[in-house]
Amino acid sequence: MKTVTHKEYIEANLSLETLLKEVSNDTLEDASQMKELIEVSDVIEQYEAINFPIGLPSLQEMIELRMFEMGLKRKDLAILLNTSASRISDYLNGNREITLNIAKGLHQKLNIDSDIILQ
Image 1 (cartoon, one colour):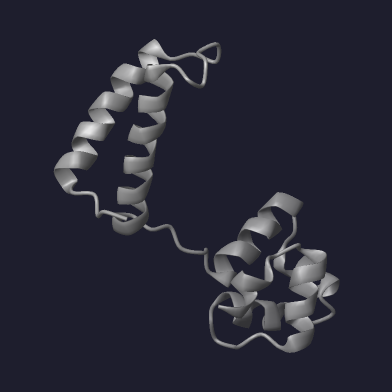
Image 2 (cartoon, helix red, strand yellow):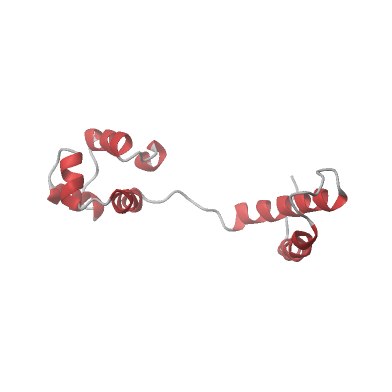
């Protein structure tokens, strides 16, 4: 696969703006504008994947997000994971590595992806 240059990326973005005004949900897939839209989108996606990669969130960020979503305070999370609030603080501040039991609890009870836990 050919590497996309910055110039090609800029041109693709400009084309995308124009095409989005011309293409709608009713546009047929084999229409030339739709084909061009897909090609332009692929160029943009390829360039951004190399130059602006989005990594996994940190485990601390993910725990804090789940706590927010579930309305949990640190003491609530400690009860849920059968540990102490100070231990939760140590995990969130990066002062302590999580144990296997805590990792399992984060995965099962907070639905945190194992890839994030193991990174």
